[in-house]
Length: 194
Figure (cartoon, one colour):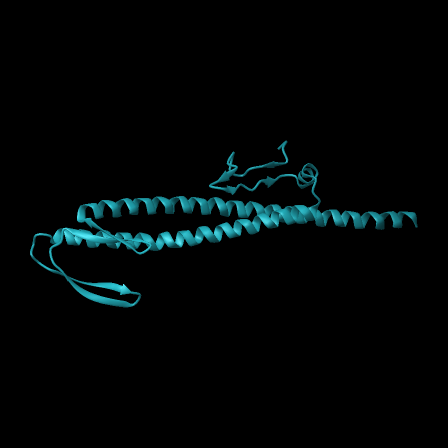
């Protein structure tokens, strides 16, 4: 290759604010073009690696939240579907519901045309069963789409971490090689003089 670095993921320079790591083909050329010494380049790439790790932690937390949210939405959809199926039968539905973590209560639900949904931030709204179903299906689709984007972001990020780790190893190995050459040269000159 004629250039000193190329992106492993094509022309992609970043993904949702995550900068792409550049693979360094020739460490010596990279160091001379960037006007850095080995230690400065190592420090830069190690700092970038730490930044990637922080972003990875945030994305993993978001992924966990979404993975917990999706089953809750699906459960709510099932409950609304059950209420709609029992509507007009005159048959009451006996249900246990969670009042607080680990505390449940039993309720007898008669025919109903509406349900109340928690929207978050201590906000609850009453919806007709049809509106609630539409809202929950929309929320489920959005959550699954967000999870897909997060998984792609995490994969991109892992690729950048790998490229950065390889770059760090290549710069370190280059530095070790240069130090050995510097040690051998004075020893060889001294041996030749004697």
